[in-house]
Image (cartoon, rainbow, N blue to C red; front, side):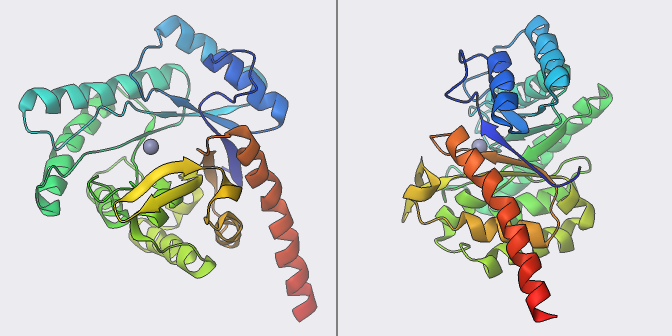
Length: 287
Ligand SMILES: [Zn+2]
């Protein structure tokens, strides 16, 4: 993948309808490059629609990712709930594959007052089973546990990276805004590059060439994330993040989850090349 592709988490507000197909068309009209299909309330798309989605994406050149349902908890207390969570993830990856989407992110679990190591082992065991099922089906979609914004949610940066080193065939979805909200830190160029260093050290350079990240403005308190905001309404240093991603030559999907969707996705997309120029000219001045 060459460079960062910018798009929205869900169909842009300015699309003709809320449908995924109209969403893809609008992404193309706006000059954005990718769309994350939100299955957050459940996978309700049928196979016929998924094939039309794939066709529309191919025609317009828009690349696709998906977001799995929120109702997944691989650390649930009953075998039935674990099984239902695994099924939702499998369903998501199957429909993503039919849509020709390349990457599927999901919220792995809640701690439910368990020690983090116990939750980690549970997520690892059940995710391994799910991935091996998808492999058996020859599903090519990248499955990605997301870095989460609240301390009650499984998904610190370390947990996500640890899973990725232990389970073959998965990769991280790094939500930089979540991590900032959860820690109250990680909001400067240096801190952003420290995350990218960690990704590179743990998973190799290839992980920086195949990223799936989320960016939005965010509000937060002692209990982490409270809500998403527009980038300009929040303290999130998105230009510093983009500069870090640029300097590390990061490639992949940059999905904007601000409430104003396309407005901030376009802000990110237009900010990114201006940073490139600044970096270049400052290098020239130095030499
Ligand atoms: Zn998410």
